[in-house]
Image 1 (cartoon, rainbow, N blue to C red):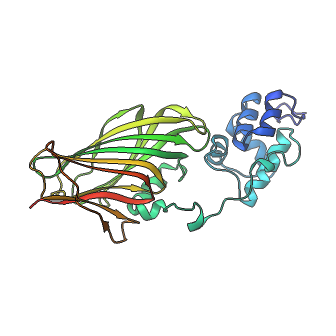
Image 2: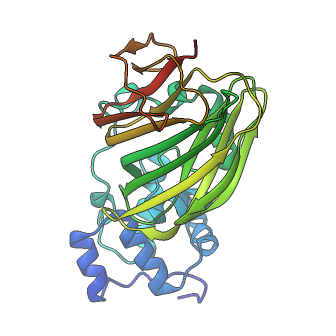
Image 3: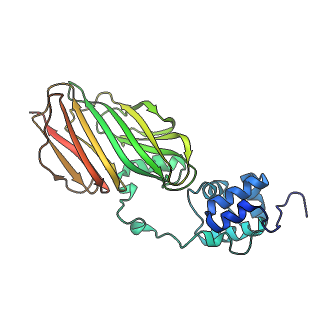
Amino acid sequence: MPADRVSTARPVDRELRRLLRQGTFAQVLDHCLNVRGLSLKRLQDDLEARGAHMSRAALSYWRNGQCRPERDESLRAVRALEELFGLPESALVSLLGPPRPRGRGAEPGSVDRKRMWPGHDPLVASLAVSADEGLRHLSVHEDVRVGADRRLAEVSTRMVVEAARDHVDRCLVYQWVEESELPELAASRFCRPGRTRRDETAGATVCELVLDQRLMAGERTVVEFTWKFAGGPELTHYHRRFTRPVRELVLQVEFTGPAPANCVPYRQRTPADPARRGHPLWIGLTGAAHLVVEDVRPGIAGLSWEWD
């Protein structure tokens, strides 16, 4: 057998046999690559020699569990992987499960990210990351500070997140402003800023936050970050957008100057849908209004107020 080819011997190590019985496609692929000391470039070359053409980016996504093979060409590559690694026929294919539904019905109860953040889609695409970042948001606590000039000054966010798949090491956060300068990420805890993309015309910002630790499926962590704002019009509302259900939202708006005349919670399905308003909230002596919602459905939850 040539030295530059991958061995096709039957699986013999105990961990591989266990993963083939109980593991995921991504875990088996990662294990085989690690045991054999193969780079993605080497793997790509071996697949090419067998007529399976896959990019290194796609192979990396498969290995990390960010996406899985579903197209006909991808499934041909999976069968080539079985041959390369000396695995029984259909050993990897059987780990893929049924194809995931696509389109509007892809995830019941969710809202398409493009509908919720229409101006951000080109920025996300430029980062060349999976649209599904692999994180569930369990709770979101957001502290919004409005200056004495009635303008947005600062937003601090604390999120508890859970990995929906293995090898999750980052998340994307979004900001949108209207008729004001784009915000700056001023601080972060339990993570560090990665790449940032901006579109001043659309008022859109996307920032990649790299987690302190790589999460396996079911593991949880906390992410904290603060945005600083400069300039902008008089603020009369603030909201949080959710594409998936969240167990708890705590939205706190602090007015550092005189408090507005009233403050009302509202909900929307998407930015294009009409708002449904609730009962007025009390603004305490500290000049803060609080919105606490459990089992938040996908959509928009926010507060609006009148100054005079």
